[in-house]
Each structure stands twice: as C-alpha cells, then as structure tokens.
Length: 266
Image (cartoon, rainbow, N blue to C red; front, side, top):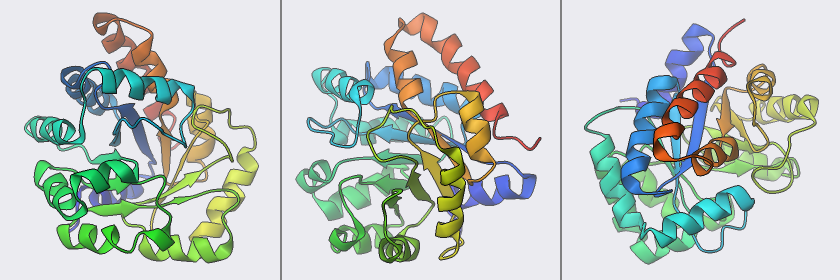
C-alpha cells in the first residue's frame, strides 16, 4: 500500500503539479501553535509539511532556523512532545508529515523506539541532515521495517557515487540542497539546479525536491519547472517569528497560497 508521501507525489504528477513542501520549527513559539500552523498550511495548499525537531547545535541551519530552535527549546519542546502533537494533528488532517531531526535527538530517544513511535503517531518521513548514507546502517533498516520513509540529502558537491547511494536508499523523495551553505541563504543559480536535478534523475524515479534559498513565489515557480517538489522553510519560519499569533495566521495563509500557485501548471 502506498503511503501518504508516495500517494501525494503520484496524485500531483497526474495533475501536472509540483509539491509544495513547507517547513516550520515544531514548538516555535509553542506546540499548540505548531498544530494550528500545520492545519493552516495544509488548508492553504501545502502538500507536505516538514516539522523541524529543535536541536542545540543545528549545523545545517542559518540564523532564522537556529533562533526558532532556541525559542522552541526554551518553550520545553522535546521529541516525545512533538510526537504527541503529531498524534493530535492526525485527528484533524492527513497531510503528509516529515520530521527533520539531527541524529543525536533520535539516538537519545532510541532508534528502534523512535521509528515505531513516529509511525504510530502518524509521521510519514524522516530527514536526518547530519546522517549521510554510509552512516545510516542502523536506523535505515529500522525505519524501513516500521514503514517510515528516510529521505536523504544531496548537494551541488555530491559526487556521482553519493548520488547513486542516495538514489538507492532514499524513500518518499530526495532532498536536493540547492546551494552549498546554510538554510536561509539566497538561491542564485537556478540553471545549475535544473542541471543537477537532471543528473540525479539518471539514477532514480524517486521524486526530487529542492530546498534552501527558495523565499518567494518567483523562486518557487522557477524551481518547480525543474523539480518534483519545492521546499520553503526560512521564509515561513521568519514570518511566524515576526508577528503575534493573531497576525501570523492571515499572512501564513496568503503566503502559502501564493507559493502553491507557483507550483501549478502554467
């Protein structure tokens, strides 16, 4: 049976659409508000939602997401509480949910217990940004057995050997990091992104989604022309950080709608 991620990409492909993948930090500013934001994002057109698991040393993240992680940790957010929030979200929406967690958080929880509990709560996929394919020996089979898609990352500097390994192991989609740097940096060379996505597709039929540096509907439109999915994170996290709860809702909805419109066929 196809899971939510696979079903979503299949459905969108049939319509000529590309997936809008929205990232927010779980627990920023609270898990109750995270639950509200997930529903608003889904209602506004986000096809898949990534929930960041706050960590004290997020090496891949820029200042916007680092600060969101710090706020979430100060609010008492933990992986166990995030899974409880996912269980609650699942009573209200079936939008595919992906956790983005640094390996230390999973190791502390216990790999086997985490994979089981995540799927039981309703998590569909897992991204571990500090876990390359050659270090995924223990968690990958546990996740596969539990029915949790592990999504691996590729970068502009990834050699063909790594592209082959990721193509073989990644489930749900492949996360192509569009630039060498941290989240929140500006994407400039969209031509090169298209070239790299075509390279990756030589090795796999797994959908390729592009993230890092996509901050506007125009960015999303250009990336959607070459990729199967468009990942927007820092721009959404910044929007949440800049307003009070009542003002965030309207801006989050309108911005997400504009991003989704950019992923539709012309």
